[in-house]
Image (cartoon, rainbow, N blue to C red):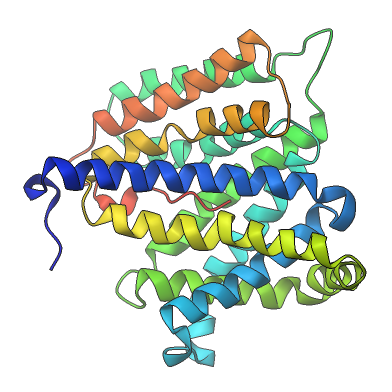
Length: 300
């Protein structure tokens, strides 16, 4: 039996914090590696490879074949479809705009979902902060205006992240979190198999080293972050998780700078920080009904 967040020791808390931060670093490293493979497989091809390989890994880790059936797949299909669509939009956006900007825009999806479900006056202020952050992030500059199509894809990823959360909540009590995630990826792999996975595999057969890197992307973007998050969730409160998840746009911006050598202007960096601040503020003034399940997982 796992300890409640209030009962854990300082050492366990530090371990849990390290696990969650580690999951975010792995996730952004996976996204950065995926972007470097776009010239080989294309953005959509990378989604197919990453989703299929991650599905195999998680099915093996959680032994999901024990619960796999056509009925279970039908139940989890909307969740899997939302996951696949979210990742396609995310990678198509990542192909056109910097990683930090992509993640910050995408992060507004669960934020707006939280605002819609809230009746608190304070959320009006946090919504204004979010809008201000987006205004700074998307403000055209003479040197590097954001690609409009990339921004639209990032907004699409934000919308599908919201649906991902909605459909994911509907699975509560029907499947364990691990099996729901694994079977969701299986459903996504089925949808992406012909249009995305097969063409990318045809390319990968001729470039096995690149194909091996796509497996690393699947591990870093799905399997390892999820395993680390599951460990941390047993020890941290919803508030702690929400605050730490708010660091994700910042981690993405740093990964973009150090791994992909992307740069953001000072106003756009301020925009990323404002969106992260709005998320922290939303979590630190929780409604009475908010629970651990309300905290979105990082799915990219």
